[in-house]
Image 1 (cartoon, rainbow, N blue to C red):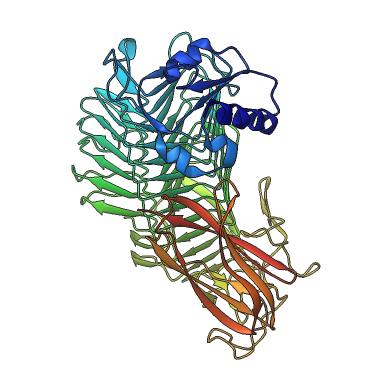
Image 2: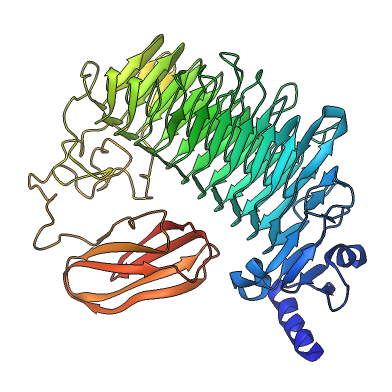
Amino acid sequence: MKTLFRVMIIFLSWFLALSANIILVPQDQPGIQAGINAAVNGDTVLVADSIYFENINFIGKAITVASYMIMDNDTTHRDNTIINGSQPVNPDVGSVITFQSGEDTTSVLYGLTITGGSGTLEPAQTFRAGGGIVCINCGCKLVGNKIINNMVTGPAAYGGGVATVLAPPYNDTTYVVLKGNQIEHNTVTANSASAFGGGLWLRSHGKILANLISNNTCIGNASSIQAAAGGIGCLAAQPLPSREIIMENNTITHNSVHSYCNISGSSYPACGGVLIQGCNGKMTKNEISFNEVWDYSNLGSGTIGVGVGASPGLFIIEGNNICNNAYKEGSGNSYGGGMQVYGAGNISVINNIIEGNVATYGGGLVVFNTSTVQIVNNTIINNKSTYGGGISVHDATGYVMNTIVWGNEATTHAGIHVESGSIHLAYSDVQGVQTGPGNKNFNPELIADSLSNISPCIGIGIHSYDFGGGMICYCPLEDINGRMRPYPAGSNPDMGAWESLLDSPSGIDLRPVATVPQECSISQNYPNPFNPSTTIKFTLPKSEFAELKVYNILGCQISTIVSKELNQGNHIYQFDGENLASGIYYYQLVAGDYREVKKMILLK
C-alpha cells in the first residue's frame, strides 16, 4: 500500500509541476495541522479521504492543502475528505480554517469539505466571523471546496461560509480567489448588531469565479440595524481604499435575509442575493435567482436580488441572469426586486436579463440616489411591483438605450416609474412610453427572454447615442451569449440582451416550432435548478452527427447523453443526476459547426 501511495505521489508531482515535498496525511503526519506544521513554502499537504475533527491554521505558509481530488478531479474525494471544526480547543477560534499570518493566494485550499465551524471572535470589535474559513488581514486561494453547514452567531456576525476581515493594523492589499467552490447552507445570526454575508463576506480584494452559492441565510435579530447579503457581501468602507471585485460565472440562488430591524431607512439594502458596496470591478455572467428577503418589522428592506452602490470608480454589471428574486414577508417598502444601483459612482448595467422579480418599487430595477447609471441592451420583463414594474427612479438620473422593458406589472406605471429625479430614454422599447429618439411602444415578440424571428426589435437599436452633457452610451460589442453585436456585421444592433441572427424581422412567425427548423439551437434545461433529473431540448436544421455532453465545474466530462447521427428536427433528452453531488454543471451541444454551452444546477 505504501508503494502505491508513492507511485501516486510521483504522478502528482508531475501533475503539479512542482519540485517540492508532498506530505501525506495520515501516512506521514497524523493530522492536517501536523502536516502543515511540517511543511515549508511550496509543499503540498495531501489528505486522504476521511473525517478530520480539526481547526486548521495555515500559520503563514505558502503551501497547498488538498484532497486526492487534485490528482484526478474526482469530486468524491472532496465529498469524503471532511474537515469538521465543531470541536475547537478554544471556542473563540471556531473557524474551521484560519489564515491570519500574512498569507496570500500562494496559500491554497483545494477539494475539501469544510463544515461545523462557528467562526472566530474579534474581541476589539465584538464580532464573530468566518464560520468555515476566516482570513484576517491576509488572503488565500480556495479551489473546488465544499463549504457547508457552518454557523456564526454573535453580537455581530459576518460570513457564515467564508469571511475576510480587516482589523488593526489594516492590510489594504489582501486578495482572495474563490474558484469552483460550493458554499451552501451556511448561516450568520447577529443578536445586537449587524449581520452580513450568509455565504460569503469580503472586505478584501477578490475574484469570485464559477462558484455555487446557495441556501445560505443571514439573520439580523438587532432592532437597530439591517441584516444584509444572504449570499455574498463585498464591502469597502471609508476611510479605507476601494476594493476590486471580479465576480464571474457564479450561481447565487435560494439565499435569504431575515431582518427584525425596526429603524426605517437603515443604512444597507437587504440584498437576498448579492451586496457590493464601495468597490470597483465587474459582475458578469452570473445567475442570481430565487433569493428572498423576509422583513418582520414591516419598515422596509431595501433591495432583493442584487445591490451595487457607492462605487468610487467604474463598476460593470454585464451579462447576468437576475430572475425570480422576491420580497416575501412584511408590509414595508422594498426597492429593486432584481437589482438596485445606488450612491455616487459610475455604474454600467449592460446585456442583463432581469425577469420575474418582485418588490414594492422597481420590480426589475431601482436607480436610487446615484450620479451616473447607464442601462444599455437589457431585457427587463415580467417583473412585478406597486410602482414601476420594470424600472423605478429615486433621486437619480438614469440613461437607458437599446433596452426592452415589457410585460411587467405594477399598480402605477408598468414600464418606468419616476418617483423623483429623471430618466433619459433612447432607442428602447418601453411599455407605455414612446417619447424620445428612436423609442418604441410595441410588443417585442419574445420567445422566453430572447427575440423571435418576427420581433420588431431586430435591427432598430443604435450603435451609440449622445445624451448630452458628456453622457454617451455605447452598444456592447457582444450580446449576453457572446455573439457578435451587431449581427450580421454592418447592420444595426437589436434591442435587448440577445442579438438575433437576422438583420431585420423575417415576417414569419416561428414561435410555433416550424416543421423545418432554420438553425441549430439548444434550450435551457427545465427544471433548473433540478433534483435529480432535468429535460434538455435542442433542434437540428438537418440530419447530422450530434453530441450532447455534461461537464462538471472543473471542465471534466461526466456524461455523454447522446453521440450519434440524428435526424432533422426537435430532440428531447433526460439527464439524471441521482449519483452526482449538488453543484454547477455544464451541458454542451456540438453539431457540425454549431457549439453551445449552457449552465445547469443540481440542488439536493
